[in-house]
Length: 361
Image (cartoon, rainbow, N blue to C red; front, side, top):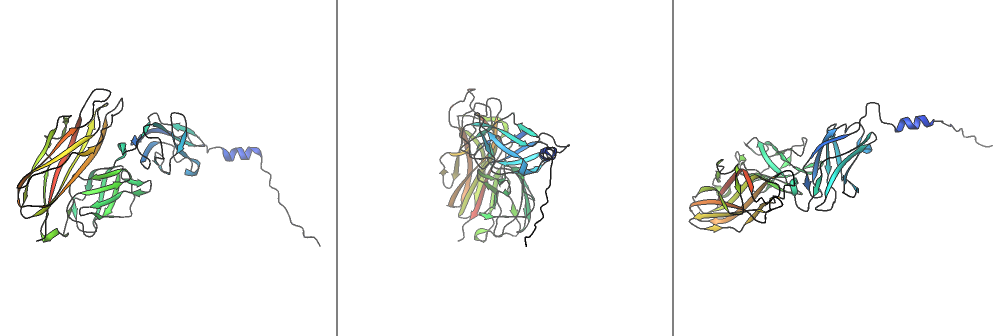
């Protein structure tokens, strides 16, 4: 006896297929109004601002970087954060080439008017720390860090380290390119906070004071900081001639290790040369002078806009003898004038901080 298997045939008109492929009545073509940063290497997280990003799911959305030859390279990966914001990871691109950014979904396509410059170095994608709060607390305190370019990738915050190289765990709250939240780790001592991403490391100009934290050698860490606004206020330009910055008096009461940080935001006019260098001198009971250290590549600033950024240099000097010292950083530009013939950079919000860490007897 043959078994009869019923077959149900469903007929769908072409009009229904057309309807399924059409965007919803309220869907709009996405737009791109801006993005930041405007330069960086592969792995840099770019924040794209615009409209109508959530009218379709991410699976129906593409984000690509478009070369001058109209070759599209997909962001790897990206997340749609809201109707007005997308975070996109820069793919492997040709360094030195400018790309437009394109967002597309079934409703249409939008291409940025500005371009993203692919770089081999950090470009404008280096992390920065503008502030954190609270300024002090015990181990386990939640600390919120505010800045730019603070993500490792579109889902993960940068590595946050407290003084004495203690890595902080995230609180589990949301992360963003502009804000991270971490817990003060066990073993942290008073000092600056750093955030490290694939494009660089940012060090806070302000110190975090650990309440009840350990102190090396059983003695307190002395901190000497100079932030004289008359020295770095955005109007004094550093050029090819060395400029002395923030002389800081330091007292060493017993043999100690010295750790010195110089942190500053900077801006450079279009066409400026590259390589902003810093040298440190410490005079007193002993004399120390470092070789020039690179703090930032000022770039060219582009043909229409200035370049901006933040840089930090750290020096360490072990087992410094007791005495009174003066620490002073000297800044100068290395390189040649760019297309505009200008040569210089403005340093802003400078801080020279010396940590005196007593050596255990």
